[in-house]
Amino acid sequence: MGKASRDKRDIYYRKAKEEGWRARSAFKLLQIDEEFNIFKGVKCVVDLCAAPGSWSQVLSRKLYLPAKLSSDSKDSDLRP
Image 1 (cartoon, rainbow, N blue to C red):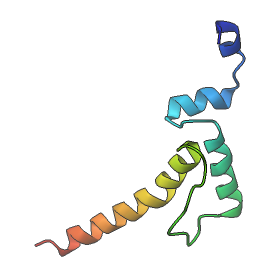
Image 2 (image 1 turned 90 degrees about the horizontal axis):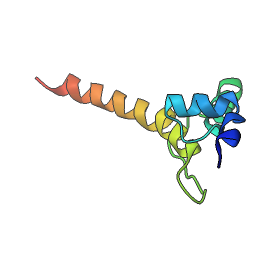
Image 3 (image 1 turned 60 degrees about the vertical axis):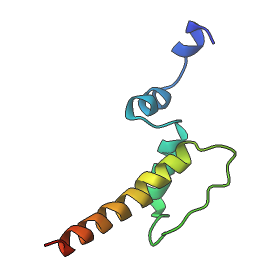
């Protein structure tokens, strides 16, 4: 891709790269979750895509990290 095609990329592409997302589709998944709260009560997810991408990245940040942080705080409560 040449410089001209790079200039035509939209703001969500650039914003995704700045924030560390793999693709701009991460913003769409976050928007859907904000509107419909699709992750409420979800504990396990299977991503059947061909390769890990922004969707699995969003899922890990929304589901795995909060669960890990809460289990770490429980562990620290048990320590003397």
